[in-house]
Length: 86
Image 1 (cartoon, rainbow, N blue to C red):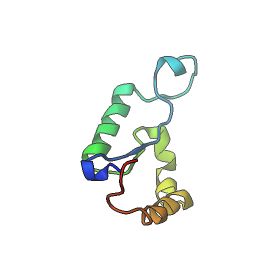
Image 2 (image 1 turned 45 degrees about the horizontal axis):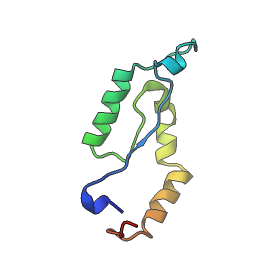
Image 3 (image 1 turned 90 degrees about the horizontal axis):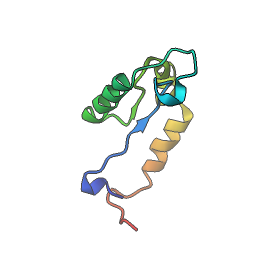
Image 4 (image 1 turned 90 degrees about the vertical axis):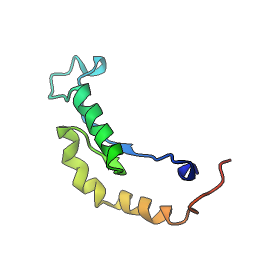
């Protein structure tokens, strides 16, 4: 693992973002700047997961309290703090 080297991992869960890829979709989209700021805020606040736009906020609480996140927490306990990098 690289945690001992100061590397952190953050989950970023996005809704639609106003990019070239979504330009043809007539749906509400967050601006790239808004999403980027949300991601930077997540890193600054040392949050594991971020939902940086209004559409993704819909699932935020369910993700944080859901079964998948609970499994993640439980299995993280099996890893040593400073596992060797292969």
